[in-house]
Length: 393
Image (cartoon, rainbow, N blue to C red; front, side, top):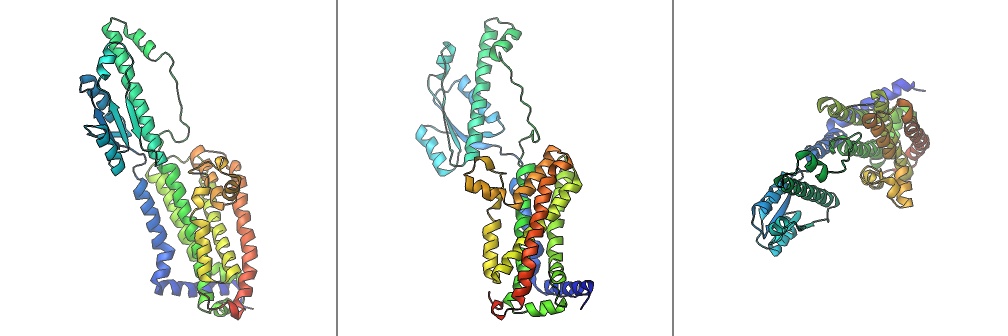
């Protein structure tokens, strides 16, 4: 029998030759996942949503209404992009997508304030996009509260009230809020990091399907096994070397850029996080091999992979809490290796948890790897010897 090392080298040389002559293999291995991560980075590179456009309908045309407009425009999340002459014109701007909010200052706004009566402004915001709507609503509320405090303080100072008393009256109860882990409310350290991991898990599973699936599609599975001396373990291991290296290096480079070049703090253990990266890639490669072994159909296995990995981030608890999902969706999310990895990534990179705290996630990732490979390898070996498994696209 051919020694395992010799078999491994022979298959690896065969795999390298295929990558060198196939632009499609090169794209799937490197350029497509790299371009996907760069694209995600370009979309979220600003980190926070700012300057969301709002339209102001000022029917008062006084110094106070203009001050309110300046207060709105000074909010980091808002930008007053225009002054409409009527409510209908403002609503048309929202319908066209030119604005996300509309603020109406009534004609008697300044007069009521000067009389000591409560003034009222009305705001509409577009809640079709939940994140945008919530941000506009929060910024509008903050701007109005700030403006109200300024007006109240100015009035009391004009009546001779001491500054200390004015400060106490305008904010009798001060709340101190300490934001943990992401005080800047920035999307980069949690959402972009999660999206990068989601891209890696997708291409890891697709990579495993590609390198084995083409053997069954082209009817060369027996040649592949013969090159490995009929040993399935070195045959598969050599197949996975290049996809594993590409995925692990890309994810590691992304994390190094995030916590090194960009300076986001890495509060936990680098060794634990990098071990989790390797296990994440291997777990999804094991799943890809298992799907390929079950179907022996390149096209069907690729479709199953897309179904399994494309929506994974939505069920991973990063963009919507797992505990708030319906039971079936929560159970699906809890079973995804990506969910385990993202929990570990947050524990280590963001919260600074001790290494032992991430033990359960590492165990789950390692267990998924061992289980899927244990099931997939015999199936792949058996399928390679079945003529009916060959030639399916």
